[in-house]
Length: 158
Image (cartoon, rainbow, N blue to C red):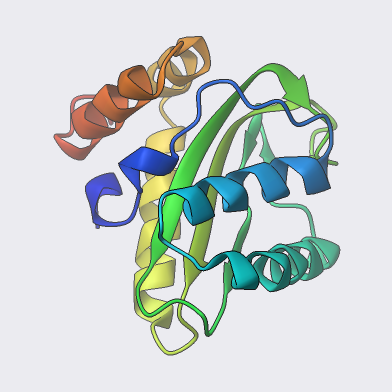
């Protein structure tokens, strides 16, 4: 699975305003609403589902990266977005460091394979320090989109 299979280009944000975990999740889910990937009336329940998932253990996986995700019946296909915080967000990450890179996923409950393949792709790409460095330096959604396309074309993974 590639980023182009699930990342909604119109929902990418290069300058998150969020200062904490919940506001980051709300902002990213709001971007998916604005990009017509989820209905506005479903946004709160998706945020709640992601926060409930966070209670099991932070999806702030370290090195300035978080992958908040949930399965939710309001979507009929896997949707996702990417956000970059220039200042970093307290996300209760496993290493205690602020998060700058966010990959948010929402998938239908009956498609666990897609969910896992997307998480696997994200995790594989995020192991590449150069990819992460370039993402953190991205100034526009177009910059992020270009990096995701390059990752899809295996220009980063060593």
